Length: 108
Image (cartoon, rainbow, N blue to C red; front, side, top):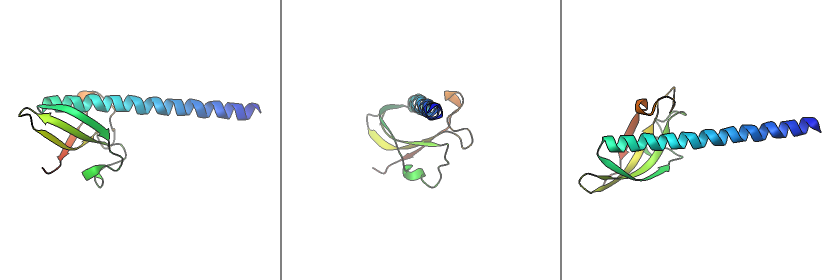
């Protein structure tokens, strides 16, 4: 009985850490995308995680994250596409300024 309770508590603790990691990673990706957008003259309108990787599905390693985005440029025009975030070996670890962002735009 004690072993089953201990196993259950360990499972709950691991699940909590995993959930915390996912939330923290998503918030960091949001900051990375906002920095990238501002640096390229865009206003971020929408950001959604892309499970299948959009146009990056063949190029994406497990540590790279892909988001579908919608932005507005300085000219007022809206664009949509995908951004791949991170580095192959380190993913989104490290300072926000050092995380790589690659964009792929949809045709208009």
